[in-house]
Image (spheres, protein in one colour):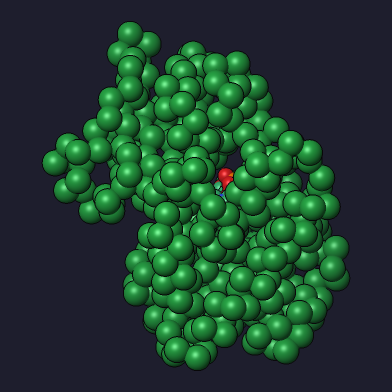
Length: 353
Ligand code: NAD
């Protein structure tokens, strides 16, 4: 069952609610299924996009708040990537290892179908490529089949790093620069590969899962392992957050000794005002939702174009460089933090839908 709860006063009072276009409760008590879909902004002629997360949230409200927060961020990401869609996000409140995982995914997808194409979704944390096929059997509004979108996300981040290096060091050459990569999952590992292939030899890494570190060390013997509590404190050219959100907070920001922050994690700044602190500390920040938009660009292309061409998608992802350049120029001219300039441009776009 799907219930529109957008106008519920308790929902509207949540700090993460920002005049969202639609908030939906999905529930089937018989099978223990619960989830939410939040649609932040909706272009009347284009569906809203956002991947689906399956996570063992402490409670339903935590999941709802995450979907509100992440759907908002997706609107900013789409706007800056030049896509005409608004942002959405789906969450399934369940442990990804639930024994009835497939049943939950099917139920979720049936609910997505009831939104009749208002919301297009794919995989986020807790879901994998295999889950797409299951969901697709219940609804056509599933994307992510063409290619591994992680590859495009990583390519975008690599481009964001290059344009940031160009601004700070007047060269985009990564080979003489040092990097601290927090989190060596899909994105962190992909980034290490791209950097290593480009001749970079000074890469520090951290992860909270020892097996992941072991795997990375086997693949890339030159990387230097760092305690997860220390990685953000290193004196490196680029700090790359590739783990979870909120890594730059009131406390950690005091420890930063890098010249650039550019990575893949969503919501890296615990609050927007920390972007201004980075600006004042002369640390260049590549706004996360610009740097990591490659995956969204790829799935939006899959939805919009019937013919898939990897080179065309790659070329679109490389445009992240131009967008970031524009933001850096705007930041210099207006003496404002890069995230503030980016937010202003995005808001102008999606508020005109
Ligand atoms: P992942 O789960 O594969 O990897 C995340 C890694 O971070 C894991 O290995 C985890 O153990 C590690 N980690 C967690 N907390 C840590 C900490 N405190 N210190 C060090 N390591 C820690 O996820 P991913 O797909 O690589 O995504 C990474 C980030 O990028 C997430 O924030 C995600 O939302 C964001 N992102 C991913 C994509 C994508 O295409 N996968 C797209 C956009 C944004």
